Length: 251
Image 1 (cartoon, rainbow, N blue to C red):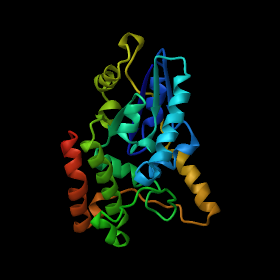
Image 2 (image 1 turned 135 degrees about the vertical axis):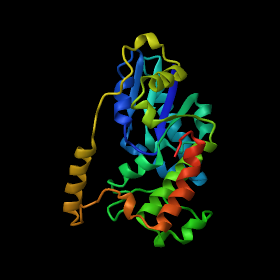
Image 3 (image 1 turned 120 degrees about the vertical axis):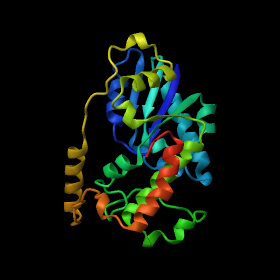
């Protein structure tokens, strides 16, 4: 059995990819398999929790090994910082899906990341990052740029394969390459198109209900590039363009 972790900066398109992979004979694919996975976005970044992280993945590996399939695949953005050495020792292959910074920022801007409703962990600069001293003075757009840069610099410096989200969702050839690289027999596949699945409306309703219960504002305006300040655009150029270009994007 081959075991593969497909991970990314966010959740966009991950359900569709999971559904597509599950249509292939002898492939078992799971999307964010356990609710307990969420804290590992935070824990997997910290060396002082390496024992907890390693044991968590060892247990997951035991569960995966019980599956009756040729390919066990997890599509899980919460494991984006999972240590390659731990995964390698368990025989897992780690694959990244990368994003164009402009479309990523436009997408994530309508979500609650770095708003008052955000309760996630593990998405802040530590003391070794100079930006930590300026964090509270940054705009939300600047914080999102920093996070895009953090994740994609990490991906660019890793030894893992990466695939552009925009190509996977629009080009059958790009999707075919991902399948080929994983090692799946292509004769098992009839077409190379991800199913169209848009969960943004469903998620919007969930956020509205949650915010109403907490008596918080639910209005998150779309990103308007024309209203960004000069400092914000400098931040975008500094934190987003370099890693994106190193991953093959032409901006």
